[in-house]
Length: 451
Image 1 (cartoon, one colour):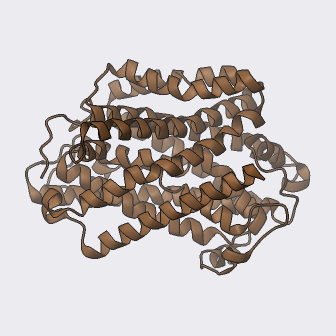
Image 2 (image 1 turned 90 degrees about the vertical axis):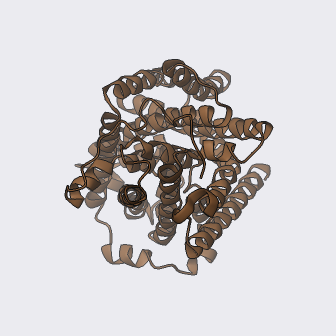
Image 3 (image 1 turned 180 degrees about the horizontal axis):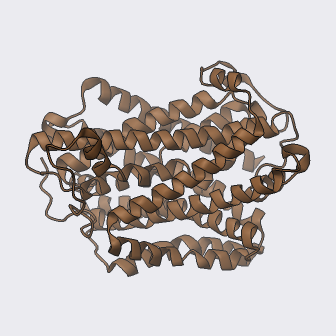
């Protein structure tokens, strides 16, 4: 096995107490619950919202089966991340660095940092647009306000990592309750929802004139499922628990509990993504879906009495903006933590916490500020950046997924916790599928731009 002399996220590593051996299973699971919530945030970020709602608006409940498949793949890969961190004491960046040259490590670090920046750009845009919709704050000022997230994160860390986990889970619960309410108000067809989880060949053939095909939207849903930063993050924060690092029995139990926590929280993100698609289907399917490509357009559509009804329309639009703000805040926390993980893991560069997180956030807001300066303080301008961020994430994905499967399938590294044969081959299949779909998504996107 690897031996780790530098702890991943040292300020939180091995700091969260766990229940003793005689405690009930529920108490043990509660002690390990939390890291999964920070991971789940990446699967419900603002960058995925438009795709899910548009998928429902154009093709009703057809693509629910795609969300289900995506979530199952996510659960498999995140379980591997948790196992890697607990068994080896390394995060994915450290484990990868131990297998490559110094020069390669620098290339991987730069690429991963750019992927984190791309992720954070989506969160900054989501937060800024939400502040504009709720309080009429100019977009540029809203972008600058997001710098304060860094200091909120520093405060929460000083209060203990469990406070961060509780804060993130509270925001996830807020998003879930908002969209559950909005879906119930929209009166969806529950029989068609159940039928939507059954895979159908219609996905490959369904089209709506003047809009993306069902297959292209499905590519967007599946291709954006696994965010590269999530794999680094999860392999690190599971090490915050005070399990016995030298007892195989305790390690096995820690892997089991961390995997259950991850699956439960990813189940939440699965439900939220389904709710987004169901909302699009129940409110906008059969209506004109042309004006649903941006957050502001969705906000305006939810305010329309002709679509939602006079009583609920204003409330639904406001709640949508609140959920957008909560999602943006959630994801900024995970982005800044991951920036620290990859910087220390790949290049062994250590900076003061406040400076490191300020640099990470500044790198994310500079492209947004530049975009506003060049093309104006308009929502449609900054939201176009989301397309570019998703494309770059697709390019960066193999850098994190391939090492994860290879390392957790290596018996010399993982010992008795190595991936079983069926897990290994399903993992490689899922990795290959996601890479192919991402490449196809990039090709389709550039084809649209060129035309």
